[in-house]
Image 1 (cartoon, rainbow, N blue to C red):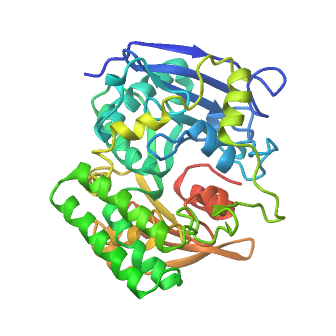
Image 2 (cartoon, rainbow, N blue to C red; image 1 turned 45 degrees about the vertical axis):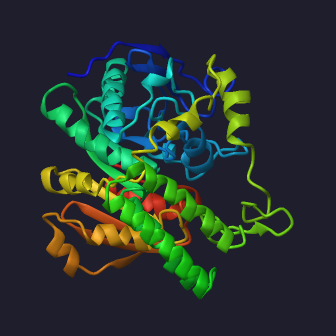
Length: 425
């Protein structure tokens, strides 16, 4: 039985200038999920209505592992303010309550009091998260009946799949009250090897690498696959790093893993992500979180102090797949399982995602194999394709890389409307 020790919480509701940081009503706090292990969370109430419980609660989980939801996901992708600290017209907060969680412990403002408390498996991450939710509902019990959805990105998808399974079990055994409805797995690290072994053919078709480079990268990828098949998880992760470095070298150190169309600076060999008008995207995560947010929210800890350690302690778990967990969600539950991928993503490329989705063994498999995908449009512009079978919803998103909410916000908002209840832009 999981035990919740205590919750340390700072609750401030207000607007920029009166408390909080940004144009929304907010609440935030630290939840102690194990003695000495603390998760930071930051809730933005929806601006769509005076009664927030009329709208769903969407949790956002970043990847890494060790990347901060309260920073990057919030300011660079979907929160009420962008990296210039200007209002974001396409913020999810306009239609739903959004809860950013620095997960797992050690990420962002979350922290552990000694190194033995870092998580080392995906199951431990899921157990911690259920405890966090128990504490969250104790503080804000009005959200227990509000439809809950967990959306995520990259390694956040691997965590979300297992969190969903553990949360459903906790609901069934009565240890938590939650109106949990579904997940949205965005460009997710569900089957690491399927993503990795499709890098070479993807870049070859794009014209980034030549035949000799393709054969070299494919050989390294097959070596990684053999280590995965043999259950040599630490060695598989180390070999994956070699594959990644060789890919960078083959591309002239000028391919962005998160969007293959990102311009590369020919002088400095760096990627320069720009807005349409050519202006470089705003402040850095560290500037915003440590120089502004930390002060506004009266947080004594330094943001990002332990984030790099999070990956180190999960390195043996990094290349393990969770496709079997996704199958269980599809076969044993009735929650909606949304999967979406940006066509320009490399690190979790769409061919790799299609590969593991097509191989799923679930009760809608036959329907999935015969159904045709269809296009969807927003305001007269095609933004992607969709295909459904049972409780599985799949979306191919056009003109988007790894960060779909940032690259194609209209396509992302369409997904939210399809997966969640009472979400309307």
